[in-house]
Length: 340
Image (tube, rainbow, N blue to C red; front, side):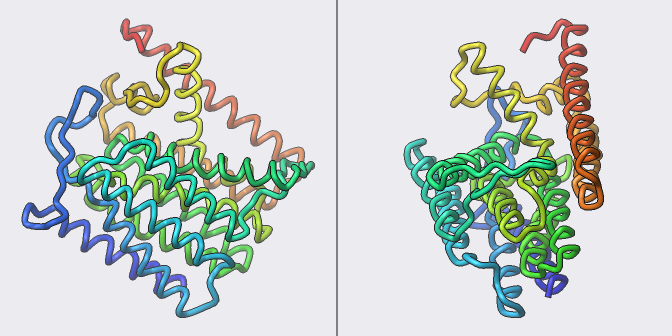
């Protein structure tokens, strides 16, 4: 089931992505560069439609071959809403109010599917928030995942690579935990991203666009919650898996807020963008990010066999590693007289 569904997802995403490269395609919508862009020429931005189609086809096959995840229909409706509004945004532009309403609706549908953080576990301890607080935390968690994936989709091969590594890691958790439906969903998402990545790896010939990046963020959030519900891991584990995105987006947001900047406005101060502008370029930067992604996914899988005290040590090591990396980027900028 898992292999067949993933193969269908990969092939459909690959073929549609290639189709959307052609100016003859009705879905050949161009992203024109601006002062914040890391690309210099117009590039099609409808790769997310191909990813969404691949996920839909692969998920449908997986559901036909075996029992689906509990609440999958609700999550599917939320995913369709995000992809549809994202596509409209790519073509004609959508106001922030409508985007927020759709994000809230998608998060609400996930809660309706039973994906609420009824408990928040860290190594050796469990917090039990009140039901209402748990729902509020869940909604914020999902909306942040949706938006941070959108924030971080600004470099060739980056968002697609995070999806391949991140969802691939979650699929392995499903296999090891004997949850084939969970493994299949995540394998399908990873495979669709891989099909798209064939044409998005630097130098990118097509971008995800808003039809794809919020959708991948949504699946990252709901898969994290599903894994917790199924007892595959505690919530901090998928946070570690997606930490290459979470740390950059969160630290950048906090820094901008402390400076009094308008955090809701587009900008070019993410650490990955700063590395590209330091002369690393897309390919070197994204390959370094892939190495980081592989390391955090391997670490997350390793936690299945670690005692509590070693889990805390692992978390501490990653906090230290991220602090060193971010400080190193800032030191390089100071050395070259670059202000951000």
